[in-house]
Amino acid sequence: MDLGTNSAISASNELGIYIHVPFCERKCGYCDFYSIATPEPDTRLFRRFVHALKLEIALRREEWKKFASPVTVYLGGGTPSLLPESLLEQIVRALDDAFGLARVREFSIEANPGTVDYSRLAFYRSLGINRLSIGAQAFQDFLLQRLQRIHTARQIEEAVRDARRAGFTNLNLDLIFGIPGQSERDWLASLRRALDLQPEHLSVYNLTYEEGTPFYSALRSGSLTPMQEELEEKLYLAAHRSLTEAGFLHYEISNYARPGMACLHNLGYWNGRSYLGFGPSAHSYDGLSRWWNERNLAGYLEALEQGKLPPGGREELTAQMRREEWLYLRLRQRSGLAKAEFEEITGSVWDEFLKKLRQNLGEKNWKAFFQFGSDRLALTPRGFWF
Image (cartoon, rainbow, N blue to C red; front, side, top):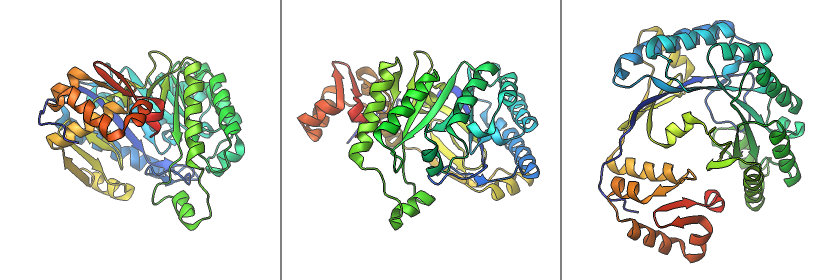
């Protein structure tokens, strides 16, 4: 669909920072994020990685002086909670020295329930980390084993309890539906148990089969049978119903939050804020271009130890690419498209855009997939699933 010729899109001068920690105790069969398995803590490798990471932070700082200090920081992976406390503290200090963290409103870390306890979580709070994202995924041990997770359902509950004791008041739980062998009863039970823990945020993801993962290979070989799409849709809509009835706001395809507790870092991605990524496979964006580090820890370490930035790629975004990306990112949020902003950014006429979209979808799908007002268009839960 032609979105006009206006070039009004620009990235915010505010900055988000992402750190990719590429270590996991064990690789989950479905996960496509870059990481390497370290069944036993490899202190030497962890130290070497953090040393290289600090070098990258220092090298990148000069080119980002035009931006204000960061407002969000996100430590992801991999499993950043595998890092020893002293190394994590070095990362935080390096970021503060290079960028200044005084303006940070949200500082998140991902954690596997099997890798944290009260002492470690209290240390995170002492560093200024104020948001914890726990990879729960399911509350049935047999499903956690099927996903090749290292934790149990009981450990999820223990991690939440310890996080509250440590002072975390902003807590997310990740859940997965569409797991082979998962029933509707299992999914509803996971939702209930998650709600019983009273998190501020829930991320609800459909299991996907990414090329290059063991799950993808098993799917292709026929040794793993995926859930039927009709049941997947039923589970997605059941989550929407359960979570909204519990007072959560459905603010993005997969994300639900208590009022005022949406993830600020991810909202930055979806609303065009610039971000800077560090670590192997991390991506960065300045409003006009996007670049990334290769998914290769050895190459990352080697380059930085020679005083060079790590190898990677770069993509310059044309005006048309930026408009299409803006449209996609707006529609994945529940707030949807606003007429005035749409016309300013695309140069297109709102009523003509709606007419063409309605014709392409057909009347039945238009009513099922979209909520429409005179000056706003947003997807319904069924539209998100479609």
